[in-house]
Length: 299
Image 1: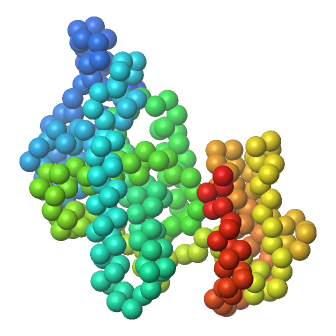
Image 2 (image 1 turned 135 degrees about the horizontal axis):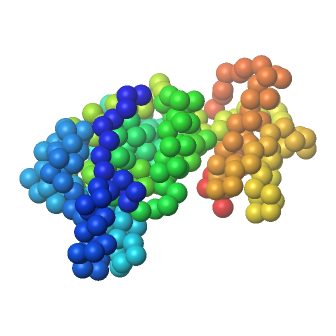
Image 3 (image 1 turned 90 degrees about the horizontal axis):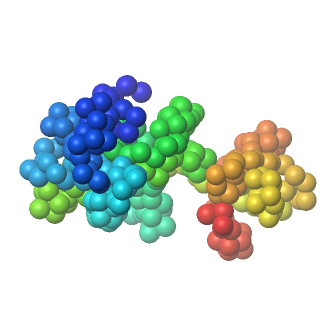
């Protein structure tokens, strides 16, 4: 992964003249504006030149950037808009690309290309996170951890990574800003996003969620599976039982969902090592019904 250009973003990296102005001369609630050079750098990364430069600053301003004062304008409205337009343009793309594909696979393809992990990858691959204006104390470390883990999953982890949501948010907000600035032109939005998200996840590279793959494996090999997550609140651990025997376990403090997915992956790896690889068959109606009852959110 190439190292993208750095820009002044977080509170600790603000130029000293900005800090002094904020601390001494500026009225309460003042935050330094983005410099013209920063705006130009973001435009270069996006491949889009804004008519309204203020939209760039808005799209990159997190609520924490105003601390300790009352938050001013943040990226949230643009994020809302970008989320909606991305869903629309990517839905159109997969619909036109796969003319015979049924709604189920189309939905999975769309989701894989606009979910939190995919958009977080877009942010860090292009260095957009360096321009994020924030004062969240632990965010930079979380982003660094996420970047380090990406090398293990070149395309998508399918639920095994926990990207900071703000990375996804900033891509959506920038897309929303482009949508506004282009007079709500979806074609321009698609042209920008297609380049940013290249390569898009295709039907050939679309992975499987580890929980669904585990259930398919157990259907194929006629084994019973149970995911035990009742104790996560106490010990942050989720276990996978196969025919009553513990086969996979994972611990993750931040989210039960991630612990569940990693436990399922650990169980799959052990089962495949023991039983060998298999050719996945379509789920039976009974197993499909059981899978649909599984809480993939970890709640």
